[in-house]
Length: 288
Image (tube, rainbow, N blue to C red; front, side, top):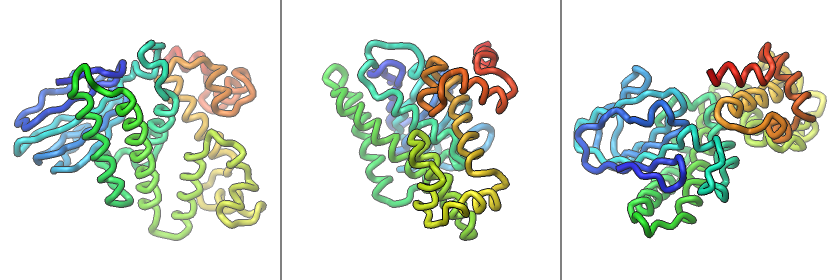
């Protein structure tokens, strides 16, 4: 049965199911992790059918629609972060690392490979650790009143970190056909991982990180992407601004400060040139 221990995070565990009803949380789900402990069958995801088997793990993002069709008795654990988790001020969640969790999930949302849905892993140990943590969360959830919130909170943090890390691995793996594209993807991964640390994204530091001359790395990046390094970093920040406007109630000034803009006016001017509308107009358009 579904249960909410942390406000607006739903943990569901189903054992030996031969039929799954359509999930009632689909329209309000922000991010979801589904672990198939046992069984096999198919999942229809956004109209496309893929297979699942024991020990497979899937991740779903906003607007994903999926239906599970078991071919044998199936045991699953699902962890759902609802959209409302990142909005409002639930007292129960006051001490949780909500912003850190959002940063990890947004990196997955803006990844080139998140559309794969089924997780692939850089190492087998990462998969083993992730499965162990999901089982731990399910076990604590099953304890009813005696659950340990500390264990659940920290397990969720590591679960999201492992998923984000392996999404980055997938990005690099998808780009290893030629040396140049692999190097470019490494630079992109570094930018994504350090977008909140502007001192690490200076031309000088990037050149040192990737063993290139200061005056060459920007030229190299533009040659292979048709976008300047500085422009790419700015565009990625503005994508993150969009994500925050869609899924959080952060003030414009908070978003500006977090993403390194001088103030909300600077953010608004930059966003308008990027999107063709002010941040206020954009927020209003997605709230309708």
